Length: 251
Image (cartoon, rainbow, N blue to C red; front, side, top):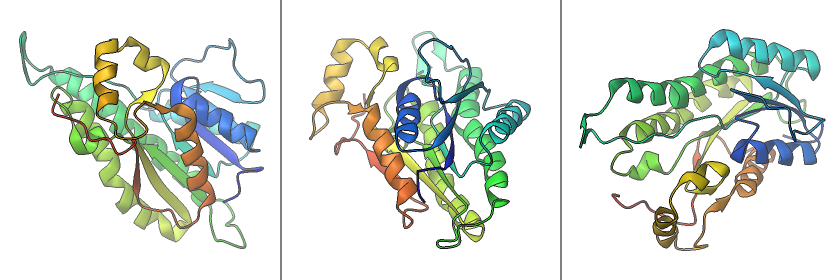
């Protein structure tokens, strides 16, 4: 699918990998609607339509989707970057893990992903297919390498991202009849403002387990991969790791 002239939605679009995807898509000719739970108008791109959106709420997503359609038209690209981190041991020093915390992470990272996907896919399926390729849309979700090697204390986060990875293929198979491709990118550690809160000793321990390049991924590298997925019509139903060959240790 061509990027130039396409209408794209990016969730989590005001920071981190989401903001990098917004920049990449705009720079390559897309009309972009950026959604986030809170939208701060400071230092945001004038050519982007920013909308406050709670991805776990159907009404909020529909309002944001209708705003995108009114401003730019029906989207043909969705890059879903919104999500939260969270860590808690099952049997911690202060007692057993909180069920509420577990459910909150699952609700945002997994249910929220599905909520946005289903509503945007319905709009994509009603679009006129590209006469040359038959495509109507491309959906890219964000997983994590924690889905494969979740560390101690990451049960909820790993489960949420594992769910995103596991639903990629069955949804891609279902939406194939509508000309919609579904992919997931599973990054390792990414250099974003969120990582600034991680103590340096932990950052060093993470990079020590990344064979090459031995550093965090850059948000721009995630965006570049998302752009390639959109443009490469044979990428469908798969999760691509973006981690420099890293494998997470137990802790």
